[in-house]
Image 1 (cartoon, rainbow, N blue to C red):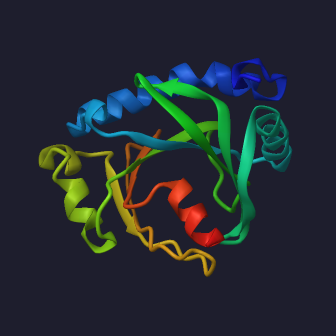
Image 2: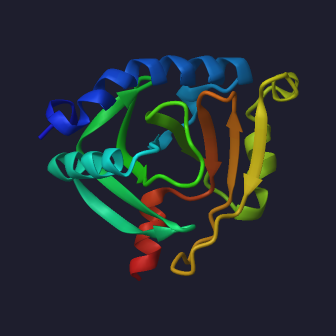
Length: 186
C-alpha cells in the first residue's frame, strides 16, 4: 500500500509540501546542493503519545518496521516503505518515528532530513561543513549542533551534525540507517 493512501497518515501527506518548501529554503540558505547529496531518511516529531501511536499503526500498513526500541529514554521506530515518498526530487524509502520526549514542538509532522556522507566518523563534521556556506552558518537564526548519540546495540559510531533554522533541520551522518540496523543484526 502507498503511504499517501493510509488514513492514519493523512496529516503527514498534507504536511509534506510545507516541509519540503522549508527544507529547500534552508538548503538554499546554507548553500547546500541537495541534488548532489542523497537523503537517507526523513524524520517526524510529535508531542502526543496518541499521534505517535497513530503514525506507527499507519506506517505498519505501508512499510516494514526495521527497528523499534527505546533510545535516549524514548521509543523510536524505523520503517522501510514499500512505496518511497518524494522530497526535493529524491526518493526516500526510510522514515524515523520518535515518540514524544521532554521537548515540546510547535507542531506535529515532518521535522528533519538526514544525509549520509560516507567516510570515517571522526571526519564527519569537516566533510559536512565543506558543503555549506560559511557566512550562512554564522547567520542569525541558524544553529549548529554536533553530537554522538550512543546506543549500546549500535556497532557503528554514527555521530550527527545538525543544522537548523528553528523550523526544520538538516542532519549529516557517516552511516545510513539501514547500515546501522544491519550491523546490529550481525
